[in-house]
Length: 204
Ligand code: AMP
Image 1 (cartoon, rainbow, N blue to C red):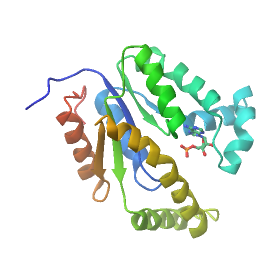
Image 2: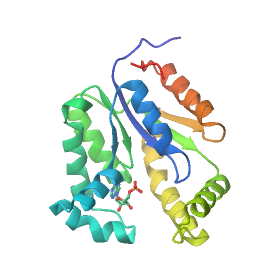
Image 3: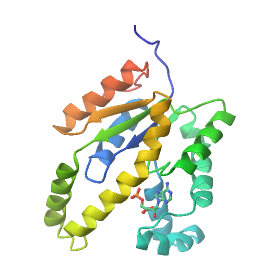
Image 4: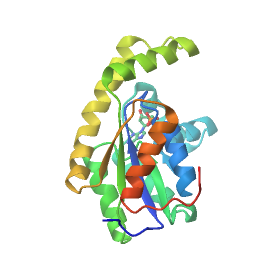
């Protein structure tokens, strides 16, 4: 059965560091004519610009801890309410824990909407580690030690489990094999979204 095409796409992309989430996220956003909303990018931009919010969160980002749910939730609510997100958005990095899932779902429900799909970019831990170590060598990043990489992957696995559980129960998670060529993976994502009746606005 083919679902009828729908002109909105409220999406969330989830994947470990080194999964290609950033690259695929941009491709999806372009194809669907929606903005990428990355909480990490928003925080980093505020820090760079030296805003009050930036000053408030600098220390938290430096330690790798999470910014408070209240602050992050308010930021996302504000961003989702902007006109360019009226027909959809691709969230990256939010929600990041069970409380944020509830917060987002309640906010969207109050607007009569909900997430259409959660794209899980599945990359085995070993592959993520290899990619991150390669990137660290290429970019000469001394902080990307095997221990630091492993620690970040541990945090990811701990954080994402409850998110996938919540959205899995709603039947909106698309698990995408994240191993292969970039274009091949993009096509897998597009196919999964098309199967949900989500229509692309641009040919990419
Ligand atoms: P990221 O680029 O997604 O890894 O985010 C970088 C940092 O921003 C994280 O280590 C957190 O300190 C903060 N951050 C990003 N998203 C969230 C979120 N949903 N909740 C709390 N803190 C976040």
